[in-house]
Image (cartoon, rainbow, N blue to C red; front, side, top):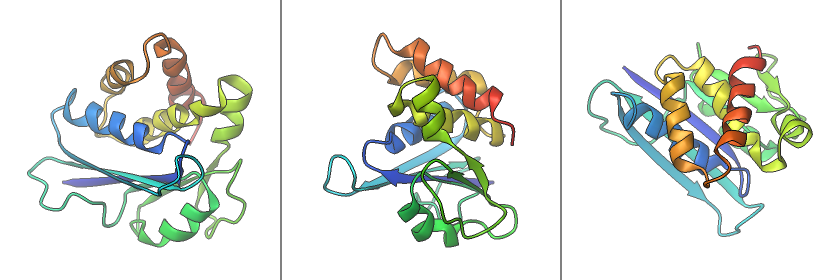
Length: 175
């Protein structure tokens, strides 16, 4: 079994942190083999950012996502660039409908991650809402493991707020 997740957006959206937390949830707190990769532009904010997590029940021979099972596009450029890589038959495509205006398929799941984060949490917490949605959709990451990974990774004093945003994605967003 090989399961691939890709999250892409721009610098400052927390794409890499989200992928690191997913990888830790699956591999450190869970019993899966995991590889996590990331790439980003030279800009601190506004440049491209892509992070991937590969989960497997055996040794991972290639550490990058080839045909993601889940792809979350947090901006238009990422949507345009990486949509074609999505697994053809049963790949799950999620877009931030607050930002992505032109979606190449009617099968996309549209969630206003950024808008929800601005209204209900903090603008920079959209990635925690994304995490909740991914964990809800992915059978290979347990809720408790994701929660432990979040608590272990986010800045001290922000754990409760981050878990609240994660729970919102996990519980409130119906997919």
